[in-house]
Image (cartoon, rainbow, N blue to C red; front, side, top):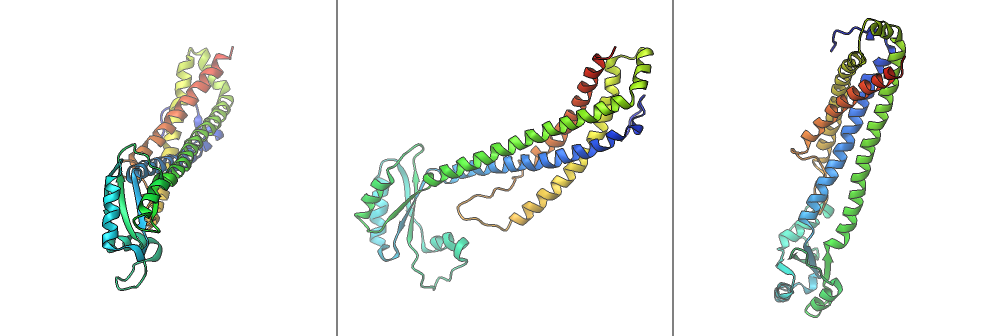
Length: 289
């Protein structure tokens, strides 16, 4: 990718590093954006699928059909609870398979009965009070309010998300500093020709446009290299994590609607490269006699 320039940019040794700087910026920026996007999407799925749910565990020796029916009735009658349903033995075994593997139906393993409870939006509960009420019906009942640990998990995930965006910003600032240095080096190399163009009547905007077009070409090269590398790495990570099934936690991989966001990284990198080069040249030329 070349353009017809009035400046001999091929003699500028500093510019040969610009595509690699842009490629590194795009590669790291795409990974940081992918991490922030994946974590943000996972938080939304956690909040949707787990918030507003309570799990009631009944010891295996107490899990009689009549006792489960009384527990379900008590839960449904509790203000703020929209639905309560006792899971079947097959569904309960499916919950523990991620930890214990596939279980044989004939295996005499004392699994507790599980009651899945759906709460109304915004409803709050005193877990100890609810546990005490249910324990009067069936001793040993355990009430697990997902919001207790989910809020802590979301808080940590939000921190990771903001750190990813901060890293993305630092990558951009570092690249801008490197491009400024490369552009100033190019100005020093071509100082004589720039002075000659000034004598011939060339305006600062024209000279800045020459550097801007050169920066665009170099940025496109680097953007392609960095994008290809990022796509390969992300595709490998997605393929490796496809078979991982973490209980209760939704997948943190990128969804088909999130992948197009990565296209913004090389586009932004090219725009930043062009704008930085142009502004650097205009500022430098403004200080010349």
